[in-house]
Image (cartoon, rainbow, N blue to C red; front, side):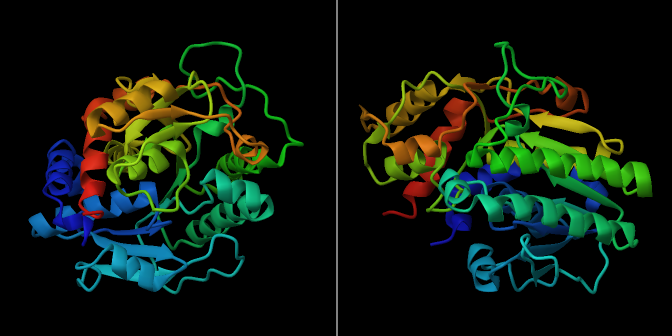
Length: 352
C-alpha cells in the first residue's frame, strides 16, 4: 500500500499547497533534492508531486539518493512521470559528478538517526562535509542557481537559557564526544556555505529544522517521535527511557516542507532560518502523551541502557525561535495534536 492511498495524507498535501502559493514560482523550474527518500525531503518531493498532479505547469523533480529502487517504490506511482527522474548520489563520496544543470538544490542527505550516528560517527561527519562541498562546487561551476542546506538544531549545543534559540544563540558542544560528530559536522557545513559565498559568490541559504516528525519517516528511524508513532500504529505501548523533561520544537513534516520551499524562493543569500512550529514546543513526555491518548496505547517508563544513553541528544532544551521564518511569510498549519494524530492514522493504513 502506498502513502498516496491515504486520504488523510492527500488532504494534508492539498492543505499545504493551498497555504503555499509560492509554489507557482517553481513552475517550469528544475529542483534537485538529495536525501529524497528521507523523512524531511520525501515530504518536500510529495508536495512537488502533488502540485504537478493538480496543476498544468510542472516542476521538474530530480530525486537523488543511493538506491534507485527505494526511490521508485517510495514515489510510485509517480516515479515514471515525465517530470520525475532519479540520479544516484552518495553524500559520503567525493565522486558525484552530475552531467546536467538545475535551477535549485535542496540538500537533505545526512545520517540523522541516533543509531546510525553512534554506529558510524566517521561516515556521519564525512557525509555532512563532503556532501555539501560537492554541491557547492556544482553551483560554483554554474550548474545551479542556489543551494538550500538543511542543517540541524543540534548546532546550538548546550545552552544556559530556557528560551527558544535564535539563530545566533550558540552554546557549547563537546568536541571529544563521537555522538557530536553530527552536530560538529553540521556546524562545519554551514561555515563552508558562508565561506563559499564570501570567496566565490556561491548562493546558498540555510535552514535548521527542529524535531521533524510525520508518516514520511522510514520504519528503521529510531528517533523517538518516529519509533513511537510506528509503535502506536501497530497498537504497541510506548516505552520512554527518560523522564521526558527535554524540551523540543516539534514540527510536522509538511510544515517543514513548506518552510523549506518558502526559504528556497524568498530568502536572501546566506540567511539562516529555524524551522519550528511555535504551537508545538513541548516536552518529550508531552509528545508521548499526545501519541498515547490519540492511539489508545499505554506509556511505559523504563531505565535506559548504556547503549541507549550513547544515542541521546545531549541538549535538554532544543526549542527554536522561528520568528524570522514567520516574518518571511511562513505559517505552520499542523499543531502537535493534529500532526501526531495524522501521523499515527496514516501509518496505521500500512499495518492493517
